[in-house]
Amino acid sequence: MSELFKYTASEWSAIQLSLCVALICAVITLPLAIAVGWFLARKRFFGKSVLEGILHLPLVLPPITTGYLLLLVFGNRGFIGKFFYETFGIQIAFSFYAAVIAAIFVSFPLVTRSIRLSIELVDQKLEEAARTLGASNLRVFFTITLPLAIPGVISGFILSFARSLGEFGATISFAGNIEGKTQTLPLAIFSEMQVPGQEASTMRLVVVSVILSLLAMIAAEFLNRRVIKSKTA
Amino acid sequence: MKPALSFHIKLQRNDFTLDVKAEIPNGITGIFGPSGHGKTSLLNSIAGIVTPDSGYIHLNEHTLLDTTNSINVKIRKRKVGYVFQDERLFPHYTIKKNLLYGEKNPVQELFDEVVETLQIAHLLNKKPEQCSGGEKQRAAIGRAIISGSKILLMDEPFSALDVNLRREIIPYLNRVHQKFSLPILIVSHDLPDLLSLTDNLLLLKNGQLQGHGKFTDLLDRPENLELMHQSGWYNVMHLSVFAHLESKNMVLLKSNKSNLQIQALTQTIGKNVEVNQQLKVLIKPESIALSKEPVQNISLRNQVEGIMKEVFLKDGLAFCVVDVGENIIVEVTEASRKSMCLEKGQRVYCLFKSVSLKIY
Image (cartoon, rainbow over all chains, first blue to last red; front, side):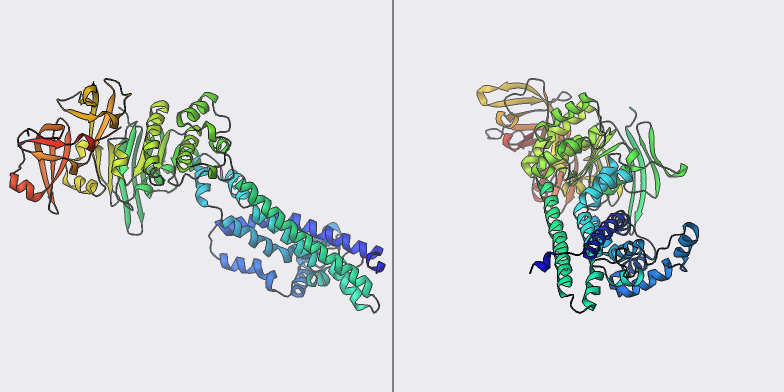
């Protein structure tokens, strides 16, 4: 039984790496998703549904396909990867960056959707009223739209974090399964499952995985309630 | 006097055309018309929320819109205070923060004066949802004034309030106009409410200006009568307190311009009116009866002599414009008009009960 609590160094490293990737991913995704979410909620333009389709593609694409496409673009011979490799000597594919990029791509549509929906719920008449009071578009956004859409922003952040924690397919195909570098929790679980006699190790990682996901969901619920409470107080 | 606001707005939306040209003096002006006849579009155009197809808008010495010179000032730079029908206070801010949204550091005296005039001091730390409809409305008016507006536009300010709250907001609006000398444009489809605030009316029908001027002057034209009739209208008389007849529990009111003189119940006016105080007396056209001679031994307190200026017939009713010093409308049935042989130019007596008067 005590075996369940003895985490090895490589297991710890997988846990830390996972949290690190998820946090960075959530922090980078959030502002991008707010900008795109606002744009989709408030603007009408030609080809909007096509753009929406493309943005939502990672939601329905098999993650391994996403990973392969990322590899095509960010690999050393892909048009972005090549630029980074030749100019800065940075190899993106099969690196920590790749794990973060893969997480961003798969979580982005989820976060954008959540933020966009909550921005759509913000009464545009309030924005109009703010403008008659002399507020610029930027001020309207930061003082009216964003604060009123905050529940969606918070749940977007947590969604992004939680989705990144669970990311597997795109990561393994684009970032590889390198211990200490790109081997996140799900990848570590996958590796342990391949080896006979590692049931205890697998179990330890699974327990952490379940706890982390649960914590993220509880935090989301808690924050959402606080927002609703502070709004009605 | 130079108009505070002058505009000519042309706007085409599907099969609806708005084409209104007017000059608005400093003061309270009511825009009256049925729902869906362009009142809100007019306000939205002045505020800049809607861009007219062509025309101009001048506010004081500033040009807000001039399509021939491609001038179209942005909403946020127009200094037009818009009090919306649904208040539109920001729900995540306290009333104080709402008041300061347009101008973070207003002159303290102005802020204090607005808070005092509108009596919203006790609301400053509350959120909008903790306030009543009337309180929210006052806060929205205050927010527009503090933001440095040069004119107040109000879209159906009464419609969201129940009858008692309506009466409550009217003195505030009068005070706002007097204290801050802002021109105020009020849109309403409710004529009695408008008339309790102002006699200066713009009549809007099908997107066109049908009449503009003092209410009593507008009564001369049958198409105006028809438009206003649909809204449950009132006659408005401007009278001042002449004497308290305390033994009878009545107040004697007189016109400064003519011999018009009526009696009203002390309780409808309130005891604290002073002699010479100006009052607005409202009475419904259907509450007035006509007689060709003075009537003796009758309980009615008021018999006002006048000359029949016009008679308009519609749907079995006769609308008689009677000059009693000011124009008033009397609504009688066509049948009784015929049997009494009432005609233009005749001397008539308008009979009404003191209790049927509304006094502001």
